[in-house]
Length: 391
Image (cartoon, rainbow, N blue to C red; front, side):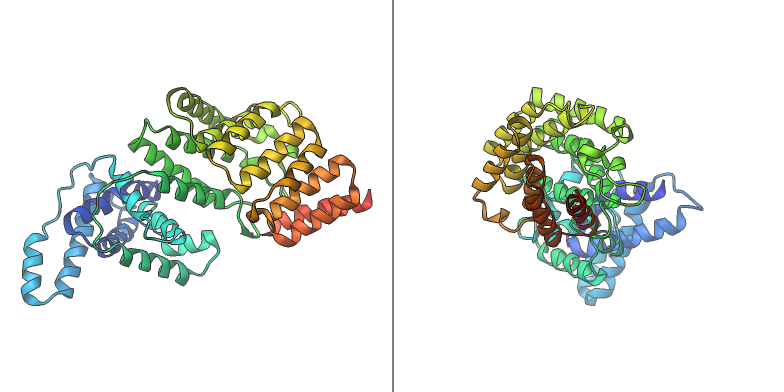
């Protein structure tokens, strides 16, 4: 309860301090100290106004920083200005303001992700490092460099939230299908991405793409309970026990994407959410409306072409027109990004298996296993190859 409350209040408290004092780096550090103090004190004595308590406590930390880091004359001027800001409610769009700052185009994508999870999500450096399976020092360096880069930036929400959506989707995707390591997914990342996207939608309720991204996350995460077997093995969509899917997420996701498609210009996140909805509504792979999915991928290929759109469309095409048509389309794909991607080999293996080419399918499964860094994916792909060898 308290950790959830602290994470929900973090962007509001950071925003309040930076608006008053400037210097994102120092203010964010002061807020982290206030959050630590709250986590230690609140279990025994919850304040009547948690947000006001955090703002006041963080402000005092910032004042202490100013007093210790400046000369006497400068310190006196700073202290004179450094009265705690008004802990009155902060506007809901402050979450968007802080997200835009954390996703500033001057920052690298890894830095945007780390700073977003730290400043907006309220995760500690250690938590972020564990989620991405990288050393804590590496995450700490990314966050420090990012905050230094933002010194002097105006704290205003401006421009398109597109880059924020990209960062949130990246966080979710890494959580849903971990790119490396022993786990199929990292629940802490998918959970945080959904939470932050809900906050963003509260700031931009009429933005169809924000709604589309939230719907996509919910419809995708709904399948998580069925993606891993009791022994920890990856379970592909076609073999999943759909009774385990999260029906509450599915219902919410379908309602969101239905509303967005009927009231907003169509964008890539909405189209991906619509595809996910078709999958989630079907009782099985065989009863899935693959023709509708293929049509949606045709639209997505126009709106937001990309290597994974190409590969996923091949799967839909094979379901509609047969594996040979999918193999031909895959062979014709010219995107350099597909040349050495394990997903291409995995799809090729599946289609070769459907077409009856057991030897070719086995070789492709093994090639895919060699190229992925995910241990569960390696296990699944090698098990498919082994099953074909025994056939």
